[in-house]
Image 1 (cartoon, rainbow, N blue to C red):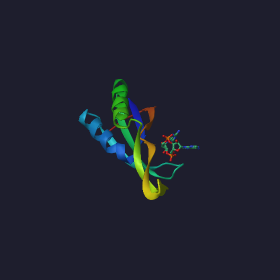
Image 2 (image 1 turned 135 degrees about the vertical axis):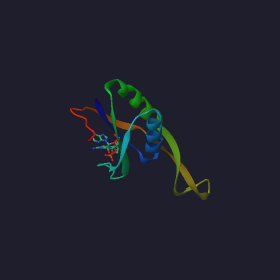
Image 3 (image 1 turned 90 degrees about the vertical axis):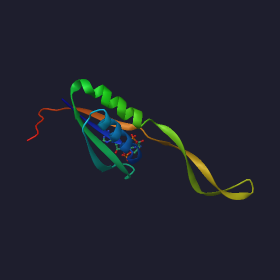
Image 4 (image 1 turned 180 degrees about the vertical axis):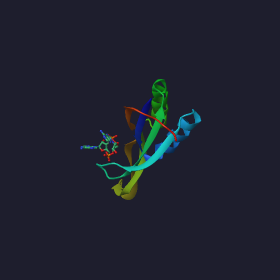
Length: 107
Ligand code: 2BA
């Protein structure tokens, strides 16, 4: 048995959780904080059989694919007037650890 720890953005975690549940995986969702940016993120804990790891990783990847989004920035001066210039930022992606489980018991 394996324990998957997947760190995702808060935005992507609901989609991943939903997709994992829909495909029969049990998930525990932890509210976590990145040590570098000190911003909130989400860690999903998934206990599954060894042969299910690839499927779970695929579902996580599918829901957290790296992409760029346009976000409005503070007003800037352009072409003779003040306007909110959108900036492209990269969002998404997941950091995934897969651990061996020595014992698993529900009592
Ligand atoms: P990512 O590498 O995509 O990491 C996103 C979040 O995943 C991290 O949030 C952290 O919560 C977790 N994480 C990643 N690698 C980990 C590991 N080896 N062990 C435990 N947790 C891990 P943050 O720590 O807030 O980092 C946010 C982003 O800042 C990182 O994105 C990376 O692009 C950058 N970053 C992190 N540490 C850095 C450093 N020492 N120097 C430069 N950039 C750093």
